[in-house]
Amino acid sequence: MKKTVFLSAFAFVTGLAVAGALSYAHFSDEARAREAALAFEIERAGSVETGFYTRLPIYDDFRTAAREAELRKHLLGDHLQIAQATGVEPPASDARIEELEASGELVNIDGPEDLYYFYNVPTRYRYLTPGAARGLNRLTEKLQQVLNRYGDYPPIKIALSSVIRPAAYQENLRRSNANASLVSSHSYGVSFDIFYDDFFVDLPGEDPALEPLRLRLGFLLGRSLRRQFHAVLAETLLELQSEGAVYVIWERNQRCYHVTVRSEN
Image 1 (cartoon, rainbow, N blue to C red):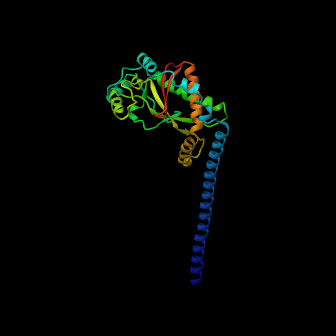
Image 2: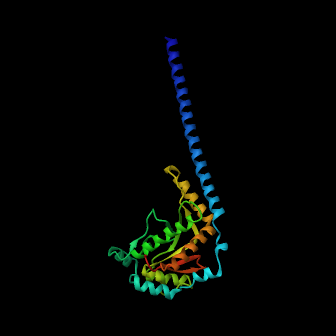
Image 3: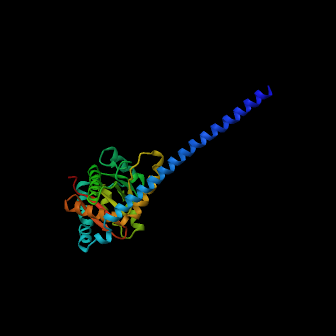
């Protein structure tokens, strides 16, 4: 009887040990697989970065006096002329923006699949006219086309730092920014600002568990390559302006391009 109990206890302990070993081996396999996946994501991001570095010009090499003059050729008066002809009546308040959305005169442009993101833009001011929203999408698509002239790259996203501005917001802005105008084409829902010191590289990936890593790597790449992406953005804006699609103002102090959509075609 004692022998039987001993053998049963031994078998039980042995079973626990075997189960523990199998569990550890399984855990180790999972850990190794996770480490391999992490290493792959980081290596791929490094390869993407190298491709951008070796093929894209930096902005200082792309810029010329003539190109920068073109990006300051159409100043506030030209932008306001388009805005007053094609935009909404400037909303006096946030509540009025909601009314214009309800009537279809403004559309919310905040979408997860878009090739842009918002840089310090309050949710309540992420609106454009339907035509301007289509113009923004055309701009981001054109940006990818220009980028692909240099190689086969993942998409990059631009940072929008200002979209619609109600009258009260514009007045407050003038108090803090002496360069802000009394009347802005932003208030008509046809203009937006692109902050050219921040970008995002939309890295591919299938494992949802690694999405936070890809998100972080995408912003790190966007910031480290901002001089290259600035050049691609400037090239894109110059082409769109020459096609009659937009007016652009290069705002050096604000580190942005002020863009007014002229045409959807």
